[in-house]
Image 1: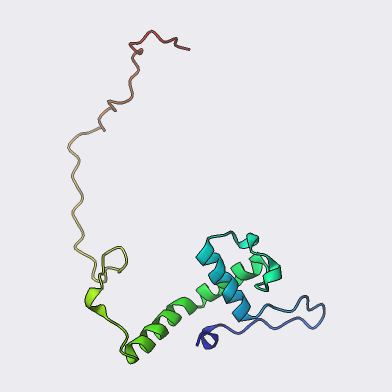
Image 2: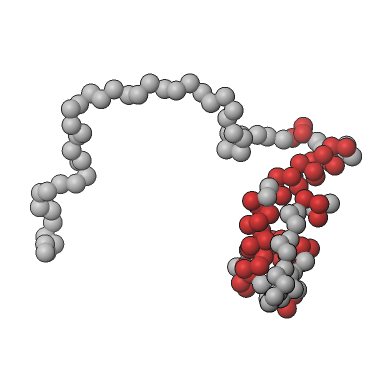
Length: 135
């Protein structure tokens, strides 16, 4: 389901091809493991077969740039909708998660009532009224 959404891998060089690339499945499993546990990218051992931390991070970054996660979200919603598994009766939407499409009216700029800004009342040049030593 996810494989068709992923961008094709870069072709390997003919001369000095380097290490074999980590499979997308292994990289995805490593990425999900990091997200689930909250460990740092470099703390996940390469012995588990998920590739190195930089490899997983680069793969995540490439997939984000390609829009894979949004496409996957839409695909999963469509599959759930087709199976009759979506129930929006308890869904809630607030303005922090949904972009305002029409944007409200532009408010007029507040006119200034004083020529200069007011002095701060929290910053004073007077000596402190305590017996502490001033330097």
